[in-house]
Every structure is written in C-alpha cells, then in structure tokens.
Amino acid sequence: MYNKNIGALCGVVKEQIMKMELKGITAEELSFKINRVKIAAETKLDIKPQFSRQVRKISGHENLSFIAMSVKIESTEAEPKPFDINVTLVGVFEAEEVRGDAEERRFVIEATKVLYPYLRAAVTNLTASAYIAPLNLPVISGPIFPEDRDQYVFSTDKLN
Image (cartoon, rainbow, N blue to C red):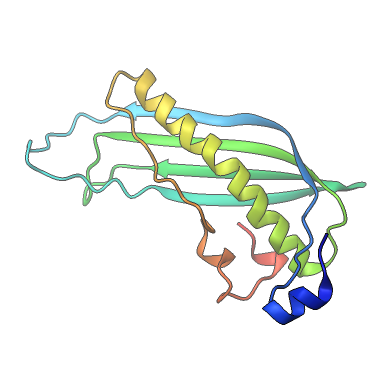
C-alpha cells in the first residue's frame, strides 16, 4: 500500500504503471549478404549498425499500434564490411489509456524496449545461420533512440 504522506516525505513520486500488451511480432525483412572484401587479420572492424523505428496507429482501433524496428549494416567503399544485414521486425501492441503526447511518448519508449531484444536475437540468429561468427548487438537498458531521452522535445510527428 502506498502512503502519500510517507512518499512526499521521502521525495518519492508514484508513477502509474502503463498497461500494454505485445500481441504479436512478425519479421518484415530478414536479409544477409556476404561481401567478398579483403580485410587484414589485425584490422578491427567498426560495424556501426543503423537503427530506425516507425510507429503506426490503427484507425478505428486507438488502442492498437504497430511499431517497426529496423537495423541495417551496409558496406560502403569508404567503410567496407564483411556482410550487409537488414532486419525489420514489427510488433503489434495494445495499450490502455494512452492520452496526450507525454503518454504516447512513454508508450513508444516502453514498446521499443520490449521489441529490441527480439531484434537483437534476430540479428544474432541470422548471422549464425549464415555460418559466420554470430553478431551480438549490445544489450541496452535505457532508451535506444536519442529522441527518447528527456533532453529532446517530443512530438508525435517526429517518430521514426
């Protein structure tokens, strides 16, 4: 039981728990291409995965949202990589009582945190299935995208 007086004395702020459910995940794209580039054995590769996200609402079903997360690794002439990867997963989420920009922002951040480990596992499994050393994306416990950090202004028009 939460006591307001004790919480106020201790400086504790009670935050409402967001009610959301992951209804399903699909792989929209899973691609791997080996690049025949010569890289010296002592060369340290800088893979630099590029992440993106797209949020879509279902008209007529305001509680349902699609969140697509992608990771891309592409070789360029300036920065050759031993392989190209493109993985996009789409999560279907149902959330209750999401009202206003602040709650929408919180929902998107929390849904992204739920979806990221699946994206991470897909990349690891894809590279392992290609019979190369599995690529393990980093474990991330906080916000994944810079726009999710509190120092950035949130607007639903700028979600990507």
